[in-house]
Length: 112
Image 1 (cartoon, rainbow, N blue to C red):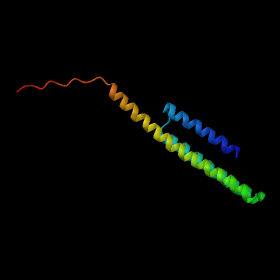
Image 2 (spheres, helix red, strand yellow; image 1 turned 135 degrees about the vertical axis):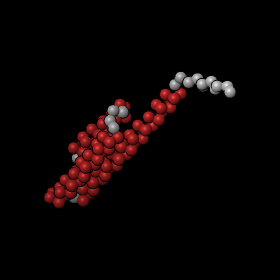
Image 3 (cartoon, rainbow, N blue to C red; image 1 turned 60 degrees about the vertical axis):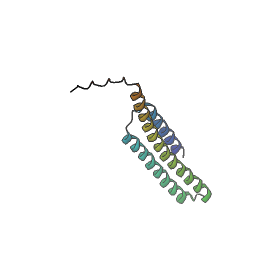
């Protein structure tokens, strides 16, 4: 479970950098998210083996599975939030640039 907590912490740091710097592409973010979800699946398989091998009590296994489900939800929500935040930042930057752009004088029309 500690590996899952460390992985979540690293994922959160990566997402924070993504939002602050905008240095990571959407494809990299989604790949990072998918990698973390694959890790959750691996943790879940490992847990299922532990339940079988060590005869883990049902209430304990439910707790761990619930934690993994929460982890999965956090990854999905963080990913969506980061993508939306980046899009919002982009829209606000565009709008700010348009408002501060120097006005282009209109061309005088030729009289006929």
